[in-house]
Amino acid sequence: MTEYEQMWQELGVDLEKHDRLLRGLAVLIRKHHKKQKNRPVNMDYFDSVLDDPHGHRVKEMVEHRKQGGIVVGSYCIFIPEDLVLAVGGQHVGLCAGSNFAEQDAEYYLPRNTCPLIKASFGFKVSKACPYTQISDLIVGETTCDGKKKMFEELVHHHQTYLIEVPQKKNERSREFFTSEFLEFKTFLENLSGKRVTADNLQQSIELVEGKFKALQRLFNCRKADPAPVSGLDALTVVQLGMQDEVKRFTDQINLLCDELEKRIAEGVGVTQKGALRVLIAGSPMSFPNWRLHSIVEKSGGVVVCEESCIGTRLFSNLCDGLGETVEDKIRSLADRHMGINCACFTPNQERVDDVLRLAREFQVDGVIHYALQFCHPYNNEAGKIKRALREENIPLLEIQTDYGDGDGQLGLRVETFLQLLKENRSEENE
Ligand code: BJ8
Image (cartoon, rainbow, N blue to C red; front, side):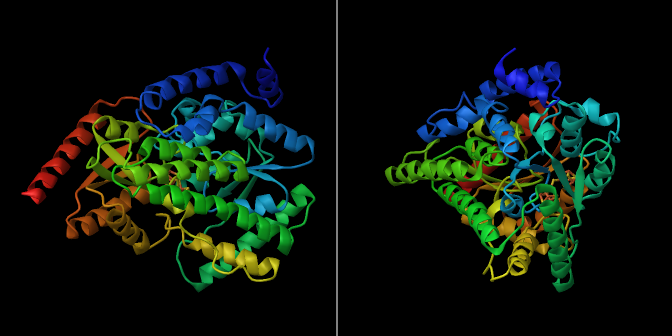
């Protein structure tokens, strides 16, 4: 037994399932990432993490726990990582983008549940994910109904805490969200035995927002034509950030951006200048959900932005003035999170505005609205996004899909869409 196998076994991981999972992942990486051309050299770090997804980082977390630290997992960007870091904890995003554990999930959850929820829950009950196993606590949220009900089941399998997320954006909701974060702070203090102070919270917020600023810089680079990095690589970077140590990850993105900015100055890209540019908007694409990006880019387009929680929704908002006290800072965090335009808010015109703004800023030829099957919030919002884009004459392809492997139908639809975008371009140039 290898050192890592020993570690996984001690965490209660099902080694046989886990082995199958890692083998499947290696196939996906070969199929999607390794076939790309002209990749930036500084993707090396992220490739090394991809090639060792449950080894080095999990070991760091094991060491962290041996020193008395806690690990907190969550499935949503509404959960403030800053508070976990302030009590000396480590945070890990547990959302999954694979149907590997679907059957295990369906034993407990209805089949017509969104694949992201089934995957996230499935990886817990199948014991195939070391990150879930190592989490001292999983923090849930009341965003969509599917997740809410899944958390009611999850309490029987793991120590769980629930944060109630408001549904409307107004002053009362802001106050309520602040009180939810304050209660969560107290819970974390009791769990970790460490106090949140104005100083350690300030430092944690600066750390997390340093990561957000680096991601903003990465996405800014993607505005260039030719795009200096593929959409698939950019998406993968954001996905890997859900697990990585914050400071190291931030430094690595900034290193990558140094190279991308140089590429832009020299006119170097992953495609020819003038390649068709696509914005993907909608449900989050969690690790290792790479199918749509891969199809677009193998068909000659380039994905230049994701309006998603594995994209702009994650990092676009920063705290606006942190104040002096712990409570001031927590209020500021609640404000920051009220700015996340998740489809769980109503009426959420802000998200429609975001999609239009991003389409302009990234100078896209078209938008793909991506909604997971049975994801009611994003499937419903597709209608108003469609109306808004039509008014601006921006072509839209609406996709509703699951985590299945078949590319056939999806591939055909994407190719037809890209062909339409090409014809639009030619007409504009006439
Ligand atoms: S802030 S998008 S991460 S809730 S895809 S589980 S919405 S049925 S993931 Fe999300 Fe937080 Fe919002 Fe972002 Fe439900 Fe839809 Fe599934 Fe979803």
